[in-house]
Image (tube, rainbow over all chains, first blue to last red; front, side, top):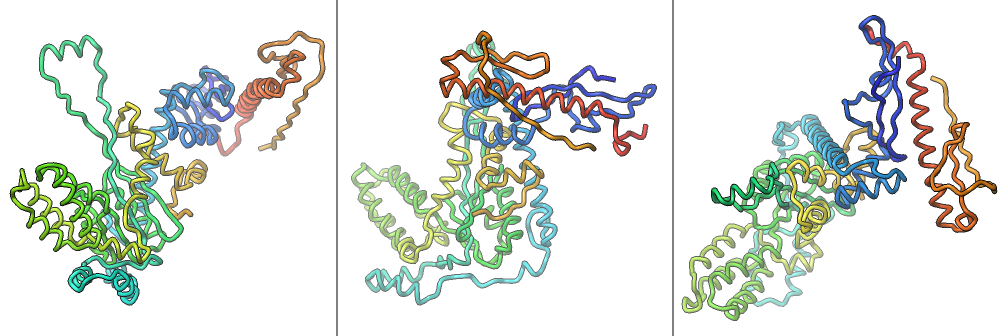
Length: 426
Length: 82
């Protein structure tokens, strides 16, 4: 017997509907093609084909707004008004959620298989073996320092710098950073409701934000990016990636900004792994110095003089001299001396992560997390920021997950098998 | 399960019919669109007309194929126990 409701499909060729049938004996349904032959659907659901998902989720909504994508898609399929923007949004959020769930499942399986607990702490003694830092030969570092023509004091301080120079051939560079987008209000208020509230009580105009975390991994010519909600989740997936690609026999070098919680999360997650290092990116360091000096000093001219002297010292990784310089600043030039003390504390706290940037540059090592910043732009900011849009937490991370799937060239495999392999890409 | 062959043949033939704006379903289930002489000589118009005609045809073919599949006698393995 023919079923009342047609089976509905949204495909690359457009939207179609077809009749389905069932075999009934008494009250029992013996066979229902809408469930036994085709994938089972909910009441108003449509089956979305692989081609449709590639167009809509991978090439469409990650690039432009849901409205524009809906118009583009319908035009491409020569079927006006077929798929609406709300349907696209719901579909993309569902697909992004599935990607994140799969990533979580894959990571859990890898961690279990490799002998780690669910939080990423190793239970397998093989992983706990202490490993010497994989660093560049001392001769090469000495050669680079020799070429700098430093005075004896400067040279001694540069040589005292605690950050070792990693061997790039055996190092995975990891940039981790948070990115925030405006959060949508849970419910939209009608104009009259809004008016009542404005007249009746004080409104809280504090803007809320959705926090996502993006990581970019690079090992020689290969790279991978991860977008998740929260640093611990990103670090778990990162560990899964390192384990499955056998990259823990080298060094893991993190590039970070000055965010304390990020440092703490990395140190906690990789406390068991000795061959890791963390480097503070030069740009946020200089930015922090500039802001603190602006707060502390009287006038831009004095601030700029102090900043250029301080930046030069920090470029050489001379934290002792930088702190001494700050302590020597004449009180007459300061309007808020406590801000100088804050900056000295910041430098002290980050001292283990302040390398000699000049020597690293001469050795051809990476100095900044600008690839991580770029990934923030590509995975989140370009689509979700600066367009006056605000996002739900689920909607924001779903789009970022789809974009990461695209950047990692994982989408063909995902669309076909619904699996993510966490394998390296060129 | 029997096999299926996709057979496609799209033709552009001269005719004396009046030009149409949208594809028309013929009695045999095929779709046709008649172009004016000017449009038939314009590459852009020909491209759009071909896409306008073939996309609905693709949808119709897929829909009727799924409908026919659905009508077929169920396979033994797919039968429900109830």
